[in-house]
Length: 322
Ligand SMILES: [Zn+2]
Image (cartoon, rainbow, N blue to C red; front, top):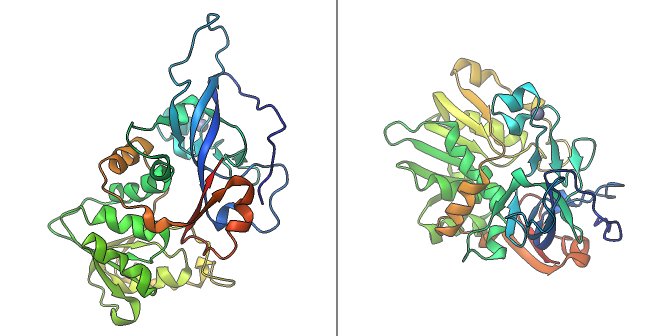
């Protein structure tokens, strides 16, 4: 559900920028059934900064960001709580997520204008197209999985699940000195790995041998976590990279997972969320991540909800022009 708030003049507080979205990306998760009253959704966008709210600025002073092409990190922190002061801004207790419904969100990008604190904005490098840069946020999240472990020797790494995140993470991991494979169930999506020179295997052909140093769970399902527990070696590590949205009704609740193997084998299970947008823009500018498999359809913002019909949640996005 696209909420059209374009008639309202956006209100920017001090230190916030008004940005005109040019290209936006959305997945099924951005259009929850029935919509969310009072909230503009969407958080993946490239936009141009129209103005920056700077109380006390000299008349005629132009902020350096005005006119720049930017992307945004989605987590808007307060800058004042004890976690922010410790440098843990993404975990701020008062954080608001761009385009997220509910109390933890603030208005997102599916509108004529979006208001974002300047500290959340990152200038897109010249030469990087809007249609690639728009995926900086999920690429940053994929890159962040690398920060969750220190490779020793030449580790065996399994990326589990051919979701959009799985496809990004496997490309990132393939650049490490490691034996990396993507394991999933959709032959067409698994075969994308051939293009990148990365190993891929069908889940049905892979034994749960407890021999992987690191398993990165990208299915977002309880079953995926159970499978990861069967694949990881004793004292190995499971990284949960995909939110538990589930593969369908009844599969979204991790309480269905028997965690006793994690105890018996002393497995580390850690969560991983957002990453560094600047790093993602740099990786995209160097051509290190192919985002083309993420794009299912293209259209205009006004057609967004209709375009998403039939797009698999968590697997592909629709690219929307303003
Ligand atoms: Zn804070």
